[in-house]
Length: 373
Image 1: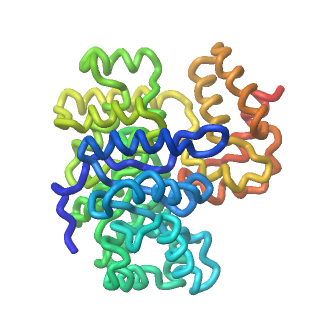
Image 2 (image 1 turned 90 degrees about the horizontal axis):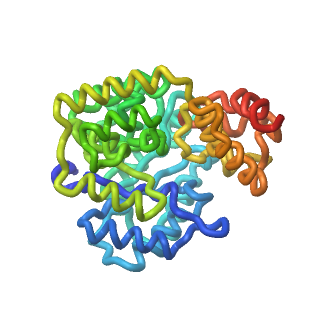
């Protein structure tokens, strides 16, 4: 089953950071976003068993599956290793996902978050690669692959021993090219060398590459005054050979409009723009920032209900702008509806699921010293 890169939408709709209202997904808002996306000729939706506490797949059903013909869109979801305790769980989870999403098959199905250690070992223990082949043969999966957060060595091992894998999803953005944990460039090179199509996650690094210091934003605006800062991050990955689809976890219609604009009559980067990206990367890396992408994997299982990504966003802003009173005001409002940084009990649940492998307990202790004193 070869995937034709030219037939794939360059912009994928990641159903991971959906708009919320009164603590629940704002379905009416999501439907408006889905309609704009589909009307732009785009049709790739990415969800997962764990997104939005298990509600993302259900939202895909309500906002997409029930409202559009099945052959008009592509739906991707993922098998969660951490929910597999025995062999029968694999089929149970898959069938639950089909029911949640209201479909008979998934166009793209991924083993979720493969990394060195537990997750990969689980997929091997329960023979999930061969299971994926079987599901594909039965027509319950159209295309089979995995999302990856591990080392280049592990990636090479997997793709060389599993030719059945049709695509791989990796974190790729201009800031993480040399990140010693993410190693985006090395992962990208491995896949391109083997002609394995790439789905990109975190192209704007959880919004970090959409909100820049004024001096950096000015450099982008000097070259393309009508384009957003976020569009530079998307155009960067969209200009790379081998990239099949770029996922954006859009949270509102403004982001949707801007991203659609970027990918309508897409204009690849030229050499001067690539050089500017290198210059901006060097400037950002010289600043001390917490590398959180706001994936929120850490939030659902936190026994103290701490909104960890929001706290890290506050700290990052204060590191860049120490006198910004608005950040502390934001934190004051945040802890009225969630736990304080100092509430952390050090259980380690968050660190066990963090794709960026951040020392969250230590960082929350630092944040508590700044925000809770």
